[in-house]
Length: 221
Image 1 (cartoon, rainbow, N blue to C red):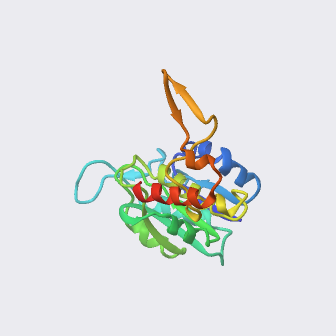
Image 2: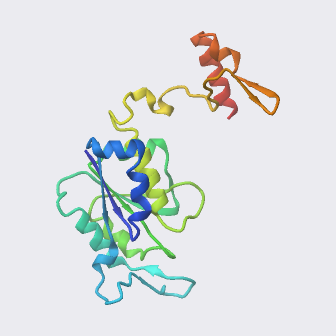
Image 3: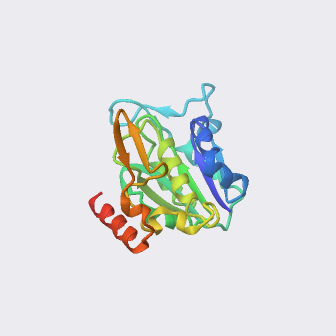
């Protein structure tokens, strides 16, 4: 069973999505485990404050290193001897792809560190390297409010590649020829007096022609 450890201040931002549909079933069937640890549980001030002003000036606040590091250590407290990947989200990081998802699926534990505000004190990254293999990823080209959306994307992408999660291995789209266009019944739709039909090639049952059609659509997408 692959174990995901999400280091976040906002568990509720992730849990609804990660409990639904295929991911929810994967958890129920013990294909994956998803756990959460909050850095706020490891602060030593009465306000529960996890951020400070950045050295050198600049806007916003920066998450402090020790609460993050302690949260990671706590989440892995019973996982000694396991193959561990620690994911640090960075706009300039390596692009997260299906190839990278396959690589992460080979680990026993994947720790996803969700930053907030203007980021995380860089010293947390240096401490992370003492726990396992550090991966610096950019998930998409947009900037997000926090690391929770990228973390959910990674859990989703990795989980669906695990044996038995989708039922059949060929259900993983990029492992088969899937066009950028898909259709289903009825054959013809009538919308505001105009007909929209399914491409004829898909209804004839000639698999060679269908494959050729899909490949052409892929090349144009």
